[in-house]
Length: 544
Image 1 (cartoon, rainbow, N blue to C red):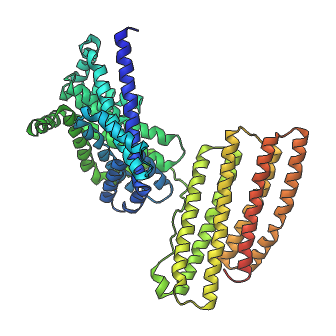
Image 2 (image 1 turned 180 degrees about the horizontal axis):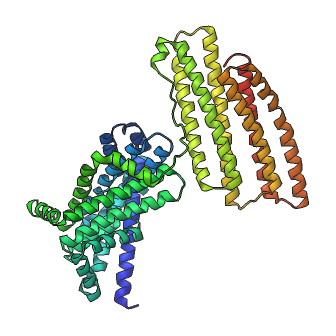
Image 3 (image 1 turned 90 degrees about the vertical axis):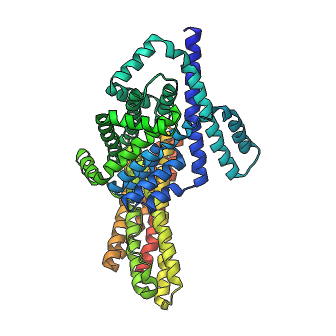
């Protein structure tokens, strides 16, 4: 490798690495400043499509990552908090929000990049105040972006005079489809549309590409980032995730086709804006990027319903919807009809118990199969159960402030206490998932006999919880009594499992590290039965 090529490659790759790091570091700083508000915004302010678009813009600006916004959106769709229609509107907004980075680059303040890096570092290292530290991350990332751009621009300088590079640029100028392909492939390679658009801004600023050649590359960058998100979603088995990702690709492909059809007038329009407002070359590309995404959203916004139909046809099937929030807790009933409000809590109590049963089933399936998708679903179940617990606790606390009869007051107190038992069942399911993650990390394996013992203990727990749910739904004390009697069987199962596993360790059929983990694992089923027993005893006493 010649000294020239070494300098070009080292400077360009170093600059690209610094750019990607700086974008992420600035986004992390913004996200830490904002806290958990992004998920809250997407959850609470997306009931109408237009509001969903605005939420997508705001969240993407805050975290500086359209992929990050879409990942949050996918998790909310998977949890049943958002519908596909709302998610597509958020995706549209995220495409607009991600253009902020190219506008920042358009200001071209590279000469101030090193002082900005110093100020950011000072905020990070000379104080312990978290807010100042996070602001320091943003400033450091901001300065790093411009220093990286300067490095990449300097590295690419000698390439402008090389014949092969000029031939590639000529092909891009001559064929818009080639430009789209180059933009798509480059984004897929780098995994960052912000980085590829920054490279494009440098090329246009150096007059290596004309506007007619640069715009198709820009369109390809948008397709590339959508495909990257789609690939991310396809890793899991979540149908909702795949549909949202597919809508992102469709949105950008349709927009690209439309803009290529009207490329000549669109180029003339961007050229008019450049001349009229005296935009520098980098700001011109940023304006083209923003205009493309805004016009694309305006054109396709009325047809969100059609995109929903298309992605549903392309990716058929239904996900298991995990209930993430209570349905029956009407606050207006608290003061007007406290007894009815108490009945609504009892309905949610059963729903929460069903959720904990599903969480336990998911945890055991994860133990048996070790499928990563079940690990992610376990986290969602844990969040959902905790959310139920919080909402029911808040509702019951408000109910306690009303004038309840002694019997109603006692029932409310016992429901609050029993809710803790369900939450603890969810915690044990979570702990099983955590244990499996540890088993995977340490490469621990269990014999078929050990797995059969776990299955047997789970089936007993599942049967008890099913009977508890049925007894509550039918108000049947006989079923509750049968379930309570079955609770005693778990101790014999645990004792037998411990004895058999100890023998397997002595015989060398099971490794000692795996044996210790196994002993801890089977305890969770005993604890689950104990919490179910607490609920059943309260029911038999007539308090639930």
